[in-house]
Length: 220
Image (tube, rainbow, N blue to C red; front, top):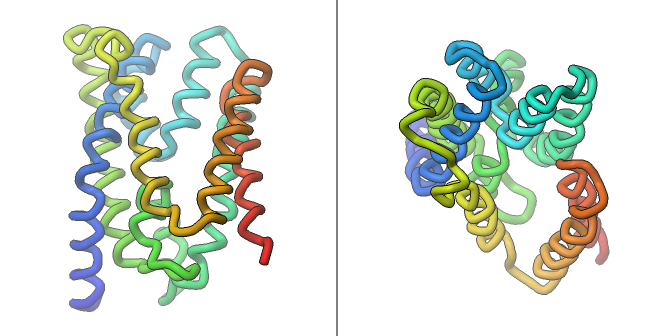
């Protein structure tokens, strides 16, 4: 890894540090939920380390806890992660080097690292994504373990208002991505689609439906 790449990764880690706090809160909340659903601490940590997809993990764990089938849990998780297909395609041209490096780097591309690595104009900095992704992954795994082990001490996350941490995080990410009227229109339409869908469709589907608002960006 070149010195320039190391410097870029360090910048990515520093840039995402404030967001890591919200991710840590969310991770502890997941750890508590996973424990209540019957996961042992080790299982919960392994789940987070290998999956690294908060919304999908929450949905799958909630369905299993409520008596849903494994097929339903997997199907819901896949739907929630559909957004990573266009995200991955947008970053792919910026990834260089041998195949093994290009194969494992995308595992660190989540919403927050993708936003940090965006340089504008469809360009992405792999070093920024790497640094941000490593910080977020470590925070997610460690906080899951804390939640799974210390759930009794932490209590109900919703009672403490911690369930609002992740929506606030996404609003912070969104603010940095809106640079013109088209971006604002896409954000507003996505919010409207989600609000309309929430009362009528299963958990997770509003997110997928709202992503259709990004098609505004195709209009010239």
